[in-house]
Length: 106
Image (tube, rainbow, N blue to C red; front, side, top):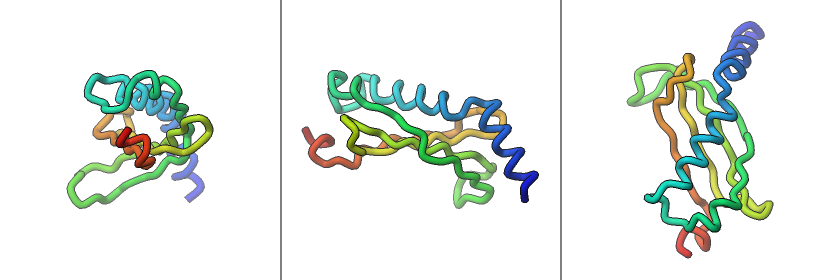
């Protein structure tokens, strides 16, 4: 088990999963399609929360690593971001969710 964890940690470091996930989240919130004004999203902070290994999934046929970020606005948690990548760093999916209803519907 230790070898598996060491290998996963090396993959995460080699693929720069945290910094790439942060870049992906920033790209998402700066897009024209995102419904919250950039004057607000420019203040978002993205903090690493966790890495998870998914080796079996209902409709995704490959194993992947999920990098989870917490989204903060003025030190308050307002959402989360998931970044799914293959072991070679190829992105297969991502998802950003704003959980703060006041912010979401402002």
